[in-house]
Image 1 (spheres, each protein chain N blue to C red):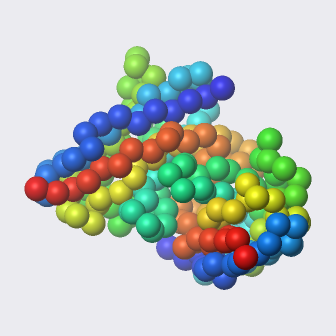
Image 2: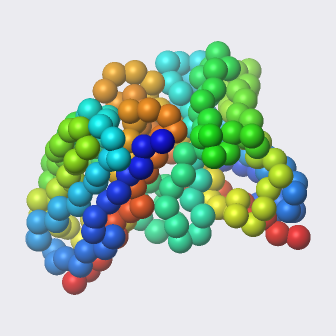
Length: 122
Length: 107
């Protein structure tokens, strides 16, 4: 059973950089999957941030692309998110998730982390 | 970018009711559509992918239909554990996008 676990600071100062890591267990990050970040501001809907393949290939949401970097560490079976120049609008629960990567389920997310709340405040 | 619009935004229903949620894409996405259920404080759960394929372990009272721009999620007989918010999501192109959500509340 694949499990994903987000970790990182719960509080980030405005103009700073948000950094989160998603540890993958029960499966290899080098399998035929894409690995995504999705966020949800308090009381609001879901927003896709971007994704990475184990080769390092990425796709980002254009609305955040200039501030986002997603990377993968195969040796630790984890992937990471960095979001720079954060403001209060970046306050959200951040989820990591797995895209099956192939077949008709490609582009959806079948496994999710439990989410971690990141607050941007001084 | 493809915009996803769900209706209604909320629905009040009773246990045993049939509930239908609609999702419309701003352009054709073939059958590249997924549905998720989210309960408060929890991560979304995949219910349906490819518009009508039931994810493993999801009860058969959930079903999806549609293609192109118009899609439907149906709960055939609402159960107490089904009270939640439901999201559609297009998987046809980047950026991936969700509908704004439909909250299913107890009547």
